[in-house]
Image 1 (cartoon, rainbow, N blue to C red):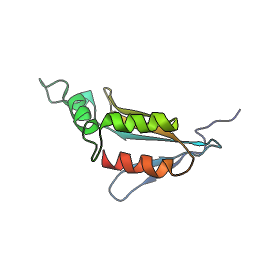
Image 2: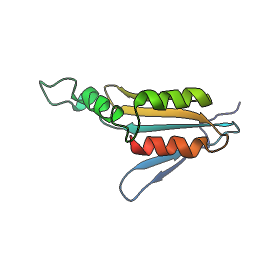
Image 3: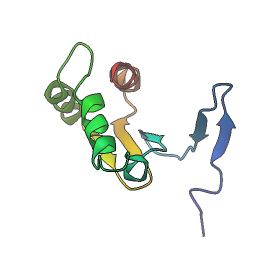
Image 4: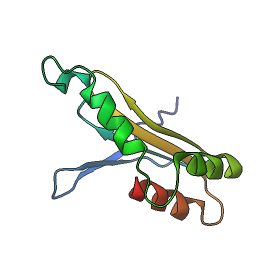
Length: 113
């Protein structure tokens, strides 16, 4: 049975950032950024700080609104999750079809978040 995770590659950048790469024979690119800080890291008595910071990040896309980004992704058949905070981590993800310059535009949008 084919295991889609068996061929995932991992690299650690000089700044400590871990990058994982998995490739499959699909016409899509899915990206996910995980920050290993979540509700467990909220200061005592200040529950919700991690979730609040998630909202600060996802509401500050340089040069466009979150609605414009979602509209663009919907138009090309993609999707985005502008943040979710769990006990362990906060993550942001999107997927785009690999046609034309969709990947370049999506990466540009994510870089400005």
